[in-house]
Amino acid sequence: MPSLNQLRLLRTALQGSRRQYYNRLWGMHIHPTAMFSLSAYFDRTYPAGVHVGAHSYVAFGATILCHDRTRGLYVDTVIGQNCFVGARSMILPGVTVGDESIVAAGAIVTKDVPPRTIVAGNPAKVIRRDIEVGHYGRFLSADAPPTTEG
Image (tube, one colour):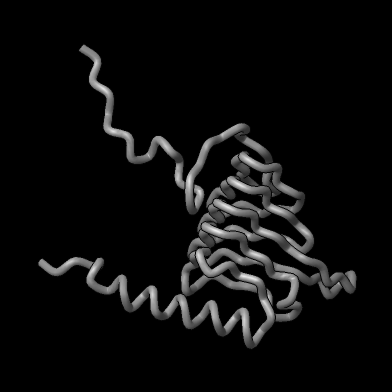
């Protein structure tokens, strides 16, 4: 049976062209090693305010906002390095997600996220501190073989 990994090259090409589109045409700052779902939404009302760091991942349906028209607010929103932004989460304008942090699926982030933390909920609250993650917010122990106790 064929594997979906056969389409990985196509997805990588699509993502690369979309990153170029966002960076060059819209003026966003998405690092070349950052990955994002093709259904992730980056604010195009104030595109210069979008900053995604190296080796970070923005999952499907996640929204990164940089403006609030009701308050006339146009500010930078920053996703640090080695971060994971979960599915259908929302990062509000002016928020900085610290390096090596994880935003849980469906979280509404209204305040800055400290480095090396996990936030979840509406509004997002810190649920764990001093985590250790690698590229794309993946736990370092994720690929460790299971331990056998005997």
